[in-house]
Image 1 (cartoon, rainbow, N blue to C red):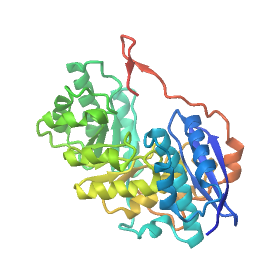
Image 2 (image 1 turned 180 degrees about the horizontal axis):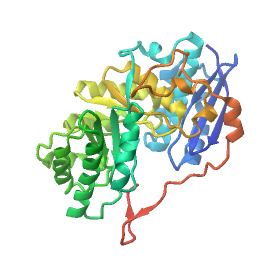
Image 3 (image 1 turned 90 degrees about the vertical axis):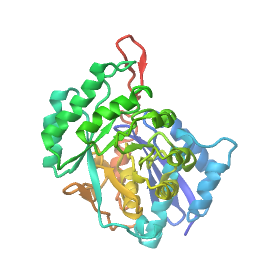
Length: 377
């Protein structure tokens, strides 16, 4: 192994941040330290960590570096710091794999499965959009869909709001039948008081899971819920094993969803997955950003015994930045692990440099209720 001697950060369309880390012998590892809408903030955090802790250090001491980045300051955790750590961690694992000539999955202990099921996210504007979007996804080979349904709710959910959510799921079920699994992402938009009623109504349509029925800080209130019989999934707004712990211990979390670029990277998600396994919970990794993060998630999903599914790779721009993009695309609703060393992804560095800085100042859109007050994204 060799010392870390240089790094570069690239803000690239549509809203991604790529990290390139180089060692003294010229080996390069890539990571994706990004928090959507906060690219510049995370970029500054990565620069502080790389300049303050990483340059000149031996690249192979990944656990030591993770602990130093996390514990080296008085303040720790949170979305910005953990996203910065996540991208650096991904890059270090990529370097380690390239040195050894092995995929990261094999460095972690090898595969627990031969392929990973993927789900296709569909985001209809109206209920009339659902049949075509759902059937198109199934025609592509997907056997699991994730339906985002919730921007039509009001500050206090009415009967009409609940009917609309159920109508969305009912339309998807009618379009694809019962042989296709459908998860529902409520994006934390439902109030804690109304969530039990919404869940009991959704149960009539047999969703595979309901994601973020309430915001993470309110999940504990769902112990008031009747036995709706729906697996509860959430975790993309949790950033460490310490944040997952109380929810797993409560028994309310069935599917943990840490994000590979927000929850401390490969090293920390392996810890979260082990904790989830001890509580009988599955892992469905979130990956809401670009191809480097997706490659890291794929390596982990093949290794972790309680991983069940992952999203499909973001198609927009991926050909611009990745040479072996076919290794990332699912076939018949499942993705297989690349046998290439490290994260298993060949970055087109010229494509990254050509597009760096172009149209990358994306900000989370502000959504409002009819009365003008702010609604959660």
